[in-house]
Length: 249
Ligand SMILES: NC(=O)c1ccc[n+]([C@@H]2O[C@H](COP(=O)([O-])OP(=O)(O)OC[C@H]3O[C@@H](n4cnc5c(N)ncnc54)[C@H](O)[C@@H]3O)[C@@H](O)[C@H]2O)c1
Image 1 (tube, helix red, strand yellow):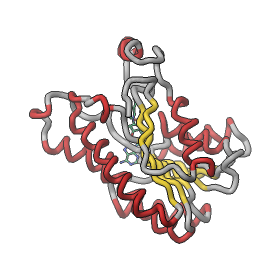
Image 2 (cartoon, rainbow, N blue to C red):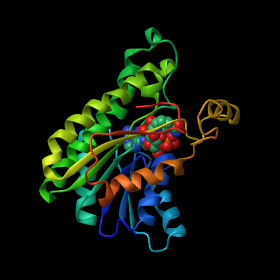
Image 3 (cartoon, rainbow, N blue to C red):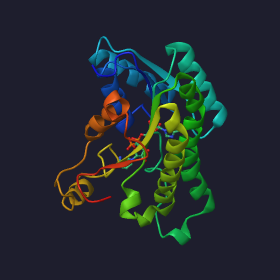
């Protein structure tokens, strides 16, 4: 139970990778706020964790990360209910929903949609939580990026660019928050089975990965639990690829 006495906030926690991360942080002893746009699903997600882990302390919260006021309200609700935030996992993102095609055919509205959730959403969450962490002289911010950056996933250039922008945010935030005892890192998943890809797509991508298997949300848990805890206190401004081998630093 490496995270007892910690409070974690995971965005996009109603399903997929965010749900797996929230469940793992609970299992490590943290109190966890699960935040998501989908109010009904995030309530179900918190109940599912409690069913599986009767001692789990988790709080469902509704938020639109793309909306600064909504994010500020989420931060206030979590601090009021759980007292503090030690760990922010900024995971909420859109990718399945985005139109694909050559970059010159991507409408501006679609470009802006990708950036408003994936980039501005992460910025909004970090900006809302950082002052609270500064006041407590410590914390962990973990952005969920994507191996798409290293792969140059060109059929979704808007998605890839929206995640690549997080590198700049992560580095600048790490530099400014380091003196406050706060680390900022980024975890970049490769293709992970969260229900959007066909079995054929998953298997064919898996064949070009060093590990030759399909990635699952649980593959992200270990590194996020590590980055959330005290053992990673001298690691900041780093990208860690969790993609079964392919993208190299
Ligand atoms: N699954 C993959 O292959 C993969 C690969 C690389 C990166 N990622 C990244 O990992 C993260 C999670 O991916 P996933 O596959 O679990 O996605 P998912 O679509 O299964 O789940 C995303 C969750 O985020 C929530 N969400 C979306 N927009 C939101 C908003 N504006 N405010 C609050 N919540 C919002 C959704 O309601 C959903 O519950 C995303 O940032 C994604 O870009 C995923």
